[in-house]
Image (cartoon, rainbow, N blue to C red; front, side, top):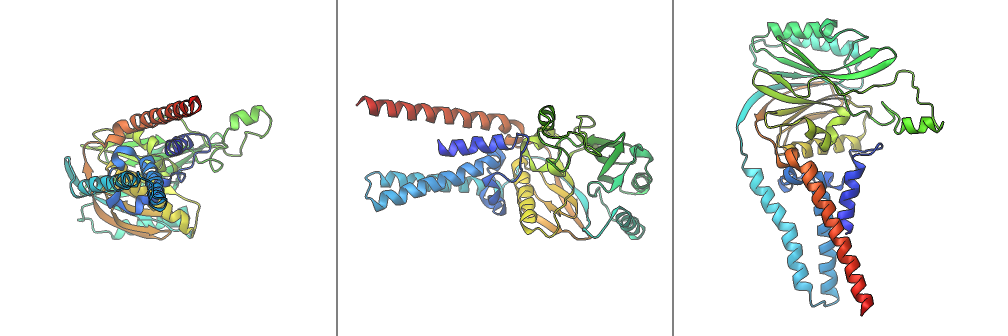
Length: 385
C-alpha cells in the first residue's frame, strides 16, 4: 500500500497547479541507463516503485534473518527476483534496438549567462560566415527566447529572415529550430519555431513555469481577492500551431524548456512517425550544480522512456545530445559552445509513449484499491477471531 500510494502521489504531483518535474524518486536512476531501459514501459514512476520495493523487501529480508523468521528464505528470494529481473530485462533492451533508423547530423548551439540577445546573434552570424558550407548538417538547434518578435510575424523578423536565407542557400537544406518571444497587447507568448527554406512551422508553449510565467491558482485566488491576477506582461498559453513538425520525410517534436521535463506532456506530441525530440530552453539558474545534474538526468530518463534521441539547446542551462538508450554524446553547462553529432531518427514509439500514460496509472490505482481491500479484509478477520 505504501509503495502504491507513493506512486499515485507522484503521478498527481506531476499534474496539479504546483507541479514539479523534480518530484519523482525514479529520476536518480537516470545516471545508470543500463539498469532502467524498462522505463520505456513504466515511465519514471516505475523507477520510484522499484526503488521502494527493493528497500521494502531488503528490510524485511534482513529483519527475518535477524529474528529467525521461518519465511526468511521466501522473502530473500522475492528480493533477489525483484532486484534482478528488471536488470536482466534492461540489459537485453540496452544491447538490442529495434525499428527502422535513419541518421541525421545535428548542430546544437549553447550560450552562457554572459551573453545577451545582441551578442548571441553576432556570434551566430560570425559562425555561419566562417562555417564550411560543404559540411552536411540537417538540423541547427538554437535556444529559447533568443528572438523578440515585438508583434512581428515570424517570417518578417530580421534574424529569422537571415536564418531562412541560410536554409535556402545551404546545399544541405538545413532546418533551424529555436524559440522566440511574441510580445503584443501587453501579453507574452513563447513559440517553438522550425525554419526551413520551403516552410516555417510554429507551436505555442503550453506548460508555463509556476511563478515565473504564471501564478498558480490565479483564477481562484483572484476571485477570493487574495492576490491581484494582473501582471505587467502576463504570459499566455493557447493550444495552437503544429503539434508535430516535419521536414521532408522527417517528423520531430520540439519541446520548450519546462514542457520537456513532464513525460505525460511530451507523450501527447509523439506518434509512430516522430523520429527525434528537440528541446529549446532558457534557464535562470546559473552555477547551480543541483539543477544542472537534475536536468541532465531528466533528459536521459526522457530519452529512455520514449526511445528517442534528444538534442537540447539552452541559453544559460544544460545543452546536450543524448541517445535513445540514455548515453550522453556530449553535455555542456552555461558555456558558449557548439556541439555537433549524429542522431538517430527512429520510427515507432515506446509502449509508455503510446499507452503507458493511461495503462500504468490505471493499473497502479487498481493495485492500490486491491491492497486496501485486502488490508481491510485481513483486519476484519483478525477482529472476528
